[in-house]
Image (cartoon, rainbow, N blue to C red; front, side, top):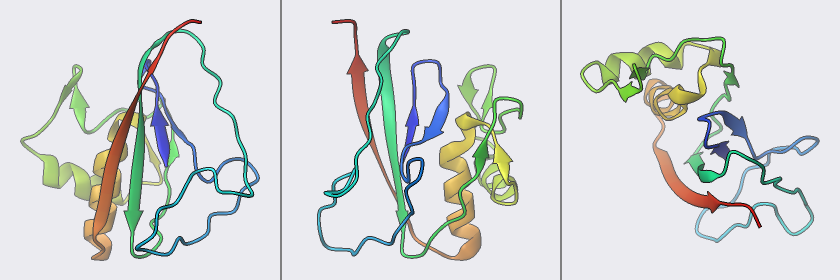
Length: 130
């Protein structure tokens, strides 16, 4: 579970600090955080639309380190690159450190390389001052 804020910075939301990732059984609804877990989200400027991305597969996928120091392969000049998408996803699958803009293509490429089905969903959260 990852979050992308209004500054397009990506961060890992689950597992949170000090939490251990555990496989979740399929066919049931899961809440994050779970019944015996807790975490809080701090809403601060700049306000706008944040995106929560959920990625799931039948087996664990490696989690990348997200760094703004690494250039994006999925976007050029603020526009998503669609012409080389399969190639970009394959390149990203071999990287351990990625730009936050490349999160979706990283997971798609990694799942394809490992032969796993990837499930993906998005939740858009509007933030504003009190």
